[in-house]
Image (cartoon, rainbow, N blue to C red):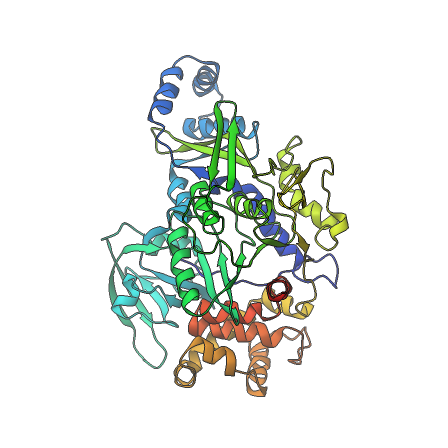
Length: 546
């Protein structure tokens, strides 16, 4: 599993708006793939059979056969069939889709909550695979692979200094559970290569990024997706925070692209009293189906805030919509993505799959929050960028909402349909969190590489001084030696076209967070980054109001 470098990102449109452009690249990509992350579990044996029965004599099949026989050049029939199916489904709506057999496993992994591999988080730094963290109880951790190790060979073949990519690393290290992979690595302080034989195993993909006490009595839980394991992860995190005195909660669903409906329902049930409606689905061939809260629930009356943004979609919107419509939580952030279409999966005989939209989902007040898709696919996918262009991410009064689609909650609050969940409290995109120079340093890749090298060099000293993530967060302060070391590092990397003095806004915070991640993983990384997060600060303010 690769460790992704989280950062505030800019669009190079204005010198005063750092980190916006890459942000939009990510959000646009999210718009394309979001249909993958909202599915029902179904057995479609009968549907697959009927498709096979009808494929023997129809226009599409006959046309492909004719092209295959008569076209001037040799064609790849399977490829042509896949493109035909994809085009047909995309003409229906933005989220119906075809998944080739060779991609299905990778697409399903984030929702299934596991994959087969050796169990390391890694980064490619200086053209070398560096272990950020071995996953606890994974095959690598059990045999002694450590943070900072450099992988130089896999199965006897050199993997360092060859411009290896993340995809190639996955291909070399992942494999069927029980299979074997041999690695050679270099470790700081040891002058010879260490050889390990690793038996691959099932590696968990966690959907809860972090859970911790952000302020006295206020717990914070960040969920990245709604997978099959998410509810169990949540209960574990909830119980841990409960023991630490949590009486109020911030549930962070920002950037959460969705997942399984049933997982979203189970999570919402934890906050709603018995009988309250959570969501309902309805489609031409699927009568109205209502999902309601049960008597189960461990946080039904305590104060709650939910954070959302333009990356929060489908299952995230179910939870946010249910809690907003039942007057159960304060929703803080920006308008969510707006995906209210439900896909069902048809597994085809060749191992590929079709995800077909079969229904829409509606919040308890009757809102369908699917944003319009009556134009082109490009228009649909560019809608997030349009929000930036229209000023919506910075000004609440720029949000394009269909004012005719108004609904009332039981307590009389007005909520809006027509495209996404509207927050109760708007938080603009923070474009001044970091000095623009920080973005340049990220683009050069030197912030991450320096943090890793510096941590690795001082790892033993750091871990003697800071026994826990909390000790590091409370006591580590960036000082002149670190700043001077970074300046020298820039010179060694021949980066002389920028003036860096170490006082740039956000530099201390981001470098401390990166060093903390290399020492204590997410337990240090997220709390440090969240210290001046405007949405979290507003959430704390709301929760502390009497």
